[in-house]
Length: 632
Image (cartoon, rainbow, N blue to C red; front, side, top):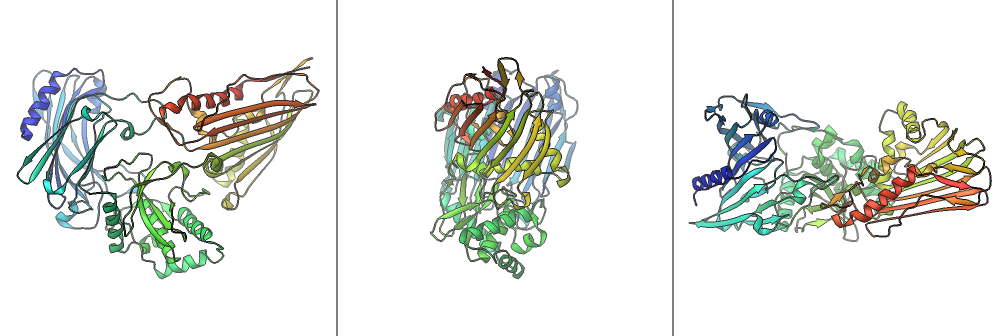
């Protein structure tokens, strides 16, 4: 079937389907790709979108296409407004090219846009764009800059989902049969996306199509759309090993990791007092994490998959993830380690087809026992870990000379990220609560607690006091002690408060009523699970938390008298590998003790984990607001 015939069929199908009650509806979205032997691809996209209301008119008033001039060429070939009254207007003359808005990364990205102008509900915008090139810039000049980094290969990630209804979507790719194109369809039944292929001489034309794409209603804290909604992956790369070998070679050829005398001198200085292999790796990782600022500026050659060289990174002391990773690889090699760059996808799953499912660069170092350890200097500034456990259950590919397969980071045990709250308090006859409360934390929980210091030192006192006053605004704080935030590698964070809280408990002739201070979600900044909405009883979508976590709470309270009866909130214990909860209340003489344990075992959860996760979080929230009643 010809490309023109496909467009005609798409239009007929699109017009026959109903318009959903959304701001706009895409009547058809057709993409046609032709790949050359070099890997250079010519991409023509043809869309027709209807504005269903005035909000949709506003959204369609400007059509934008993002691109990087260093690696891609983009043009609008046609832009027509089809008015509801049957007239048509060509607006292709109003084309502009602007530097794209940017924050932290300034690589010269641009936007081509067409000013469509005033629209009324029912108007439709039809446009055709042409693109050649790819997303990331690499070394090269003239027409070579449009050839993808892995020369001679083609890869694409095609979402068959949308935030607005799409009546018909067609994706066609025309490749040399000898390229052995591989594809995979994910997050749907295989027949949900129709697949056709035809052979035309030495080329094969693949067509993928889907009708009536409806927006997904997202549940809170759910995963990325590409992890849940239909998508198509395509690649001519034979396997991940080939991609790994290529990634290794392109950086070795460029000399990305060649130490300079200045770098070598700095490594020698940093490792002067290192006592072990782990010491050396930790010192270098944290030096790069803390001293190479995250700021991507346009540096010409060496963008994309080619990492900037050590001389540039060490001199500028700034860069993006690949610059921080490259700097660490260089310093580890200068120290005698075998170290390599690696690629990963932060907060999205990497599926088996070796398309370029990467948005982040990290580092791999080989230990003396032969095992590789993953390091991420981008995500661990002022963090005690070497690889952020906010990246657990995440795919990565190392660039090794012999090649490597796709691997996933393991779960990090909850006890690696503990939050421990211990309080020793007393309630007097007036209901005043006094004593001390200490929070200690490790791993990602340590990082969250230390967030209280993410400000000027002159503001630390105010931030620290605020954490207690969030719980009890009339607290009188008599002292605060804490570990040295600048020495975060020496020990886990620890913060101790001494305080008095007048009228904290209610006391009458026979009863004492209060909520244990430690139960009231002290330093909730380190317990992101408490921000989940646990109202829904069921879920259909997977969900994620910041990290696995263990919360251990204990408080001993000296009472003004001896009480015989104890009435406490009724909760349901939870015992599951994904999430568990337990608590205890008991009295010995005039001492009341409260203990609570929360265990959250994953970062990414399946929908079936929701009941135990929900009950665990509900229990902790309930204990934070439900009083204990003691009776004489």
